[in-house]
Structure formats: structure tokens, C-alpha cells
Length: 556
Image (cartoon, rainbow, N blue to C red; front, side):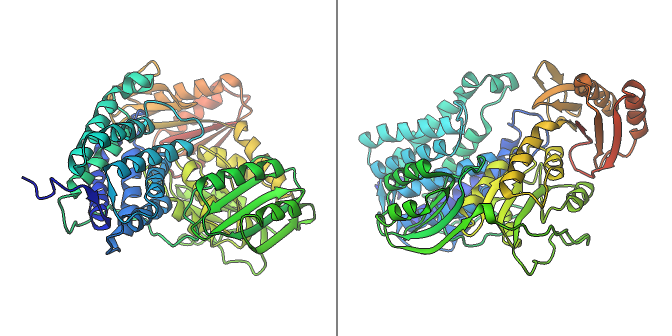
């Protein structure tokens, strides 16, 4: 009989062990979870990102020696928030945040309180996603929360309670292919849901371990302390209001309801809103035509400090600076004078790095497929740029959410995330950046530029599958266009030619071929094919040096 069989409450030390073992469970299964990705490409996606996010949370609680369950949960939430990588990692971090919010003020938690925490975790994660889909990790988390509420009425035994919740999670995970046709087509369950199950299983096992040892990943994120840990919403819509208004409100009891209510008020007064709440302070950023009215309303909540109001119509524009070309240096020296707008871009491959340097990016974060940077990695880059406004180009759909997390991790800068989903889109956005234009004009132009380029990519399949009408074998070269598999073949150049044919149906004027690090043979064959079949199209061939993708094609 387990000596923990009759435990009815989780304290801080037990939660610490559970989070560490949950992280170990994810680390042990990350490769298997990666293999569940719907697309059969080597993108190191869900398992890697969730395990690194859990590792960041575990690193924070590992430092603690306290019986206070809320203190431990808050540290885990803070670590996960800063270490969240990729869409799955960021959503996962919101489960930590929601769980911690529900434990506020508690020294320990019984089954009913843990059930409330799981419900809060699910609710918070759903709020973080603009268009949540059922059949994903969100669905698994929600059903586990609902099972927790039911189980809390029937038992006070914590281990039995958690095992019942875990079993419901496994049941609903098996049903995810029936909810999302793409999962059924690929013959897999949802990878994010599987990640939650692995983490939760580790947590249950962690109840039995007094001094757990953390299993580290190969690349641990370096974290730094942020000033705020709460999630904020930020709008990157076109700015039409004249005054950039920023200040702090000193608070004592600022609830989630208060936060939602005040945010609703700000939405009636302007746009480009960032509202970041911590235990003792709220940071407000809003573009408005009535800063006085906003501040007067804010004083009803608490005293104000660090006020800053700028008339954006009179702002001056700093000169563009370029990166040092030193191979081992990714950032230029901080300029003596603050510039109006700085740019952080995520990129991989020496050729792409050079392109972004020449186009005027201030800082390049190494990352992309198989190595999604965390929000904290991007924050570190932002802090090296002496500019009040920062544009981030993720250049990968799985980095967009992590980029957005920086909005509430950087208190003194205005962050604009241009949702570039691939490297050519990022380049197109950079080409449309004009230093002499205003921040608002540049953000609008860069966002519009994303639609001006069509991107096709050649990579290889890591497993057998049938998808988008294409039968794919492990090792085949596959062409991806518009988020779908357009072709598959054992010969890379045949696959490339089929993909080019699909891209050229819109008769673009320019086609750029970016050669990956593995594209060492057959380039002339591809070039000749394009010249012979599309003689009216201007051809550019560039050494991108990108991993994973043999060729990247950009048509404009």
C-alpha cells in the first residue's frame, strides 16, 4: 500500500516534485510526440516545444524550498510563460498560468481546489487562441477539467482523483481523430493532447518522489526575470489615434474581472492596447485621442506613475543601422541615440541571415524548423535594440505565438508582430520597410507584403502517410504549397519540378530559388527547367543555406 494513498492535499513541495516529474515525462516522450505531427516533415514540433516549456517551468520550481502551493505554481507559470516555444508550448504555458491563478492565497490544495485550478487552466488556454479547434490539446485539457470537477465530489484521495482525471484524458485523446478530420487522415491522435497526458502521468508519479532529479534537454533555454507575468492582449491593427499613452497603476487587489472590465473601457477609447497586470502594478499602453480621460478613469483604480504621452504625429524617425557582418555576431552595437523602430527577425541559414542583415534587420535570432526560439530568446534580442518600437518577424507559423508573448514581457517598448509564416514572407516584409516612414505606415506595409509572395518548399518525409491526396513514403521528397502537400517523389528534382509547375499557375513575374544546405547537386537541372518552360518569368537563384528544406521557392 502506498504511503501516499490517503493524501488529501497537495502542498508546495509535492507540487514541485510533480512538476519536475511531469517535465521528465515529457522529455522522455518528446520524440514519440514529435512523430505524431500531422505533417510528416522533420519539424521537431510539438514534443520538443512542450518539453522545453515544461523544462523552463521545472527549472523555476527546482530553485524553491517551500510548502506554499501557490508560490510553487506561480513560479512554474512564470517559467513556462518565458520558456514557451511554438504554438503548442505557448498554449501549454497558459495551462500553468490558469492553474496558478486559481490557487492564489492557498498554502495547499485539496481535490476540489485542484479541480477549480484545472478548470481555470483550460479557460485561460482557450482565451489564448484566437480560433480554438476541438480535437486539439485544448479539448483534452477541457475534458480533464470537467472530469476533475465530477471526481472531486466522489473522492478526497488525491492520487485516486488524479488518476481518474488522467484516465478521462486518455479516453478523450483517443477520440481526437473523430473531431479533426486531418488527424484521422494522418492516422494519429493530437500530439499536443498526447503531450498533456505524458506530463500529467509524470505528475501523478511525482507524488511518490521526495527528491526528484530533473532530466534536462539538449538545449536549455536561458531565462531572465520579467517585470510582469500575466498574459496581456495586444492589437496590431492600424493606428488611427494620435497620442501614445503609457503609465503604471499601483494596485492592491486587481482581479481578473477588474482586468477584463478595464480592458473593455480602453477598447472604447483607442487601440493598440496592452494591459499587463501583476500583483502590485498594472501597466497600461493605449493609443488614444483622449489621454486625460484615460488617466482620470485609471485613477479610480489606483495612483499613477511613470506617465508618458507622445503625439505620434510629431514623432521623429531614427536612421536605420545595419548588422555587423562578423559571422559570430548577430547584433550591432547599441546606437547612442534611441531610434524610432527596430526589427527582430528569426532566421536559419547563413544565406538568409546575410539577406536580412543587408535589408536592415537589427537582430537575427537563430531558429526555425526543429529549433523554435522561446519568448525569452526573443525578449533577449529586443532588449539589445535601442528603439521604442519593435517589429518582430517570426518567419515560421510555429513561432508566431511565442513572438506575441513578448508584448507583456517587455514593459518599455511597443511590440508589433508581423505574422510571417516563412522566410520569403519575412524578406518581402523587410523589402517594404522604409526608415523614413512612420511606425504605423511601416507596420501596415509589412503586413500587406505577406500576401505578395507565394512560397513553396521541398523537404523530406519522416514517415509513411496519405494526405491531401498524396501517398507519401518515408524518405520521399515532398513539395508543400499553401500549407498542403502538393507532390511527393523519390527524386528531389522531380518533386521540385512538380512543385514549380503548381506555383507557376498564377504566372508570377519573378521566381526566386533559395538553395538549402543539402542542395548541392542538380541545381542546373532546376534552373534550366524554369528557363525553358517559363521564359517570361525572371529567375533568381540564391544560396539560402537553410536546413531541412532542400529548396524554397518564392514567387511574386
